[in-house]
Length: 143
Image (cartoon, rainbow, N blue to C red; front, side, top):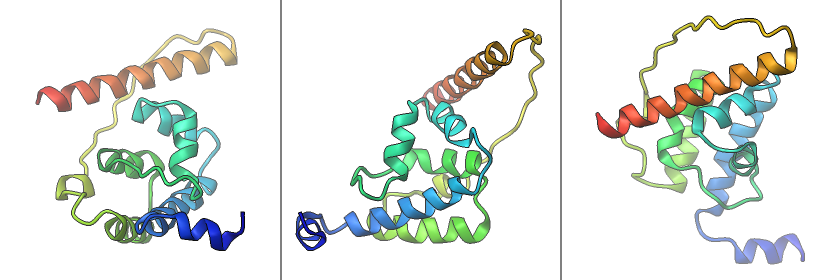
């Protein structure tokens, strides 16, 4: 299938979706390794979901509720945020509410035992990250 044929089958917002996904992909490419995994954990999703939301070829949009989490975990600069929000706004007019644009977050430290094995330590860290993400989602849903 030619690029031209593919473009004909794309929906009107697909180009704009690809624009903000490309911005997010570039951001993640410039972050430390493990950022994609941390993002997946913070979103409560699998790593394959992060692949889908950062691949411009996939028309699957990024849910508005994930935008603030993405900004927090990926540490987008002001310019990166502005470019992302502008492209997101073109793709999904009115979908982002003000609360999603500037989410307030806090960082807490948790002391855990050193399990003496890098693989076990990473697994424990991932469990804590996943648990914190689940708690945050629960707190938002009841609050």
